[in-house]
Length: 278
Image 1: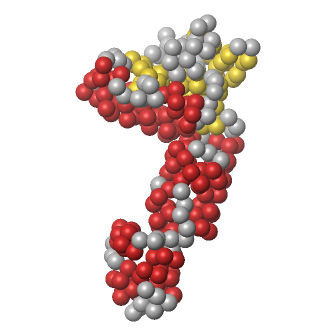
Image 2 (image 1 turned 60 degrees about the vertical axis):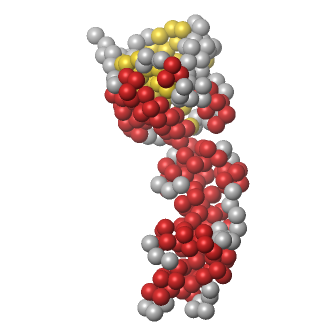
Image 3 (image 1 turned 90 degrees about the horizontal axis):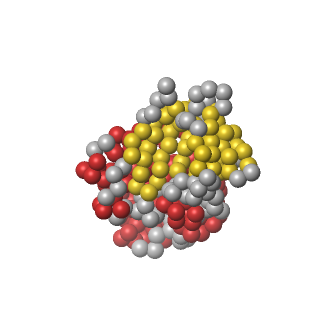
């Protein structure tokens, strides 16, 4: 008998106010055959843990196995079933007014399809948290909404249409941005410009950058500028703080000092006093 580890949310007026919410979650679920001539009313993500299945979209047939997931758009006819035995998956049904915009505008997806996943485990961890949070009902509504959004971000950061680009191409995009920052730290670096260099949206850049560097784009820029300012201050004993600030990309000396203290736990003058004497 198939394992049916799943839970569905009770969507009340409170839940309807959230832009992102999970209408249902399946965890390590033995997937049965499904046929929906009219499609599903909401967006659904299904990723394969083990086994193998087939997805039919119109006249096209796709194999879905471990390391892959399928995103189903609302009201698109589809069917899917296991191939050669047990097909275990994790799934989430998305609810909320922000979901369609996230998939179509932020991620640029236009229709249902199959994607490669570079880290099933990361998405599974979030879906597992969500599965248990839903059990607490309305008292965990904010948590459920937050976790749903995190699942969306992970899907955006960890999936691609091409197996190798699931990691390699994303890494190269971030490399392009970090190289550009390192070469242009002394001038303004708006997020839109950095995203254009990588060929992705600003929102997507922020997610990928955090995944690959463990830093926000803003933190990376500031750390690069502070590192350069330290080189300038130590390389020229007569250099004033305001000049080091300007040359490292800060037009406001007070802001520079605040950022220096944030990352170095001391002021620029304290830094000079400590290390110029060494």
